[in-house]
Image 1 (cartoon, rainbow, N blue to C red):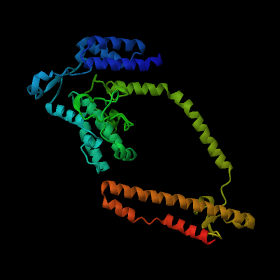
Image 2: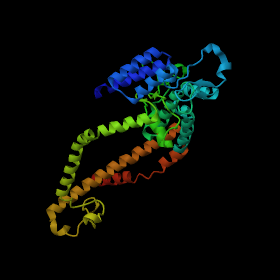
Image 3: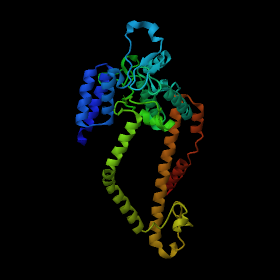
Length: 380
């Protein structure tokens, strides 16, 4: 039975699209099929609403007037049929949705510049998310606009993804099979679901910011390209049930990791600590400072070090100390150079003198130390 859940979900999605298109018979057919495959509260609610109120009431979809109606009808508030109440939207909301659809990149979606700070991104997202949330904005395509806004913020608020997007993101014509969720007629053509897809659903992102959706939602459903949502209570209930059913399965899957962690801890407890440290460590008693004879590298040992290690062993220990030290200096120098290179590149791309000056003022201490060590090796 559980194996039919995905197929049932697909049937519900097809039925939802049929409802939007006004095809009541097709919607009934796929909803009944979904109920046979795997009964869910969503399918049941849609069936009841469809049977009781007709195709336009099943998910609060407003049938758009033909283009022949002209601007006079478009300027008026239009009514959506709902299972519980009548919902309206304004011409301003319609124009806002069309603007989002025409946007060609994530910065344009949020209405910010490429230099926007994290606070500016948050402020822009908060304003747009409240304005286009499907429970508040019932204009045709508002759901797709809401998804674009969430996806744009999820990418740009992640420093790594934002950097990748700035380097490779661009306007791309949508090809067959690559059109974005609500793309349809609006024109921009940018594929918002290819290459830079959010790691969190628009609804979950909204709830993180505002602590939940609007309480007015009843039987509305929408998709984010991968997951379909019924009203908030049903969705949370299904998620809770899934987590409850999969608890034991999750525990079984995590068992190997837990065993590995325990084995690692036990092995560390059984292995004696190294006789030296490059830094003072009071927790292990390595607080006595010494210096290697060859490269004059500082290291720390315990108070009993002299009595435990003789001349031959001491020579080998100091060799290990110097090898560890050189390795650390080399790695840190590489990081310093990489950081300076990144700053100079960013300064060039964004024409930012502040970043350029910051890069030029870097002291590169570890690289200087690496040069000193190299001179010692050459001299030796």
